[in-house]
Image (cartoon, rainbow, N blue to C red):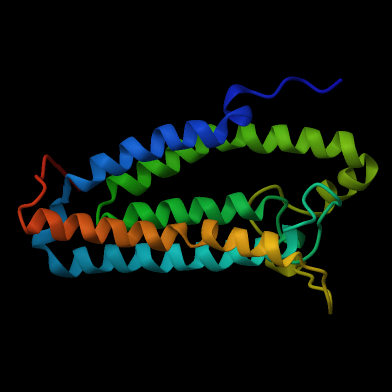
Length: 204
């Protein structure tokens, strides 16, 4: 009998939104303490853009393989041949990238800790569900593929793959969210510099 999922695993989208939107408001009125150090300031922002770009491409790659197949079969190719949870891996990279896009070290560290405290429960709950559904096939997949951090040598991609265009198109918007968030952060910085919104907090 499958155990009941932890609360966050059952309500992760709702809980994530309840965390993200208040955090976004706080970040709009937050100034980076590194703004007076242009080189450090610029490098932190560049790191954020690079990581957000990697996350966007990675999530699109995952969506190509999972769209239309998530509830129908056990996907073990493409990014899923390197790690059993590539969507969460790239999401973690994206969250850290958004954190660095605030041009601070405090925010990416806080987001990393938040991810590390919550998503392991989600991953375990989903693994239990997959084990109940696919049995020995999933156990074999677990034995050959890391849970979270990718093993690049395990990458396998087929010559062809059936994709559901409608579901993939829907996934495009989710994948681009990281880049859009960086745009919102830059807009917030411009509004603060113009004196339209206040700067209430300074973070390193």
